[in-house]
Length: 135
Length: 376
Image (cartoon, each protein chain N blue to C red):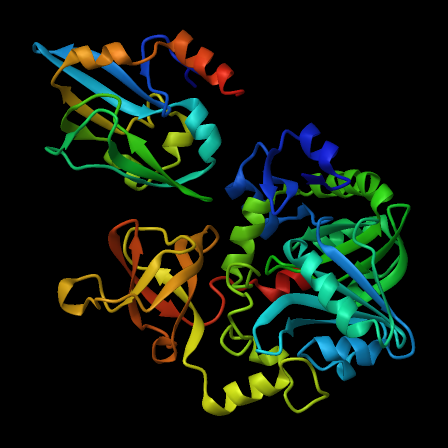
């Protein structure tokens, strides 16, 4: 189990998160959806993600999540080229429900412009946003 | 928004509530839809269906009045027996699907969909009131469904009524269930054995608690509208407003078995006779996704494979219901297709948000219960 809203993540108002790390001088961002998103979606039955080598653009759709009831778009928290995809989600989409911040991660991108992160929310701001929305 | 008598009980259980046609209803409880689906298939699911409509027809000419309204043959009913039917417009289009219960020769009960109660009531009053008394008991009637292979065994300790003697679509109008004055029918909307229990709306919370407590003893639980939908879709039971509406006829919907053209007259009979003679051109078909994708309500359907060579340019139909069928582990759907495609193995593809995904027509329910289990 991970925290509801871990402190080391950046959040979007569309309920995605990004975790930043640096490897060999390259900034990488791992991307997934938040606990709130998972609670709203209910049981996830299918996750559609881009392929390695494709690029995603901040605030644009990069994939979709199918739950039992509905389908929802995924919006990229940050732009970059996809270098890794969490392929086990193909067979085990329930990881998204069970552990959205670790096993349920979705894609990892090579970050082009880290300044894009400035527009995202930290854990406290995201939770304040959820409260504002009456959640 | 309207509330059922069980509204507070749902909140106490931590249900996620949604607006369902003007009713505040639980879509799921904290365990989630898949868990509720599984509980109903393996043990017992308990459903709040208090929002459904109950209309009573009373009087010497009640049978004649109800028969005018429905396509099935009420002459087959005896006291304590019910049947599934549709009510049609003169066009043959479906006004609603419903169950008719014969309580006595001069007293019939119809249970109709919540979303159609108002128009049904107006239609029934208009066409039946000249012949008999028609009254709407929906507001003061509670209705709880108790469904699953464990339903009979779990419910039996709560009543003296020998439940095993109640046949499918049989009912007992006056009985005692868990100390509550109730009516009980062996009917349901899940593809499992089970019961639907009517009581006074004021008694519904107490009955709900007793039923939940009994269900919990065998791993059963409260089930919301989300799993109600996956359960009924998997059993291929149509949903009014999705798979049936005023523009579709029972012959097109595969409900020819509830249309008795040679029996007593009913509204819509001439149109349905003409359609039967001419032959239907489209039919409600079931399909299984063979590619990776989930068809949802409204998604267009194309003939042939998604591969360019087999692709048809124009959609030939649309998905009326679609989603995961958790027990069979496939994604399934329903939709009206040209009758030429109403055969097992016919290749179609579904436009899932711009992506064409292969699917295959299948006959019959996606899920059929093992009848021995329910009988044990």
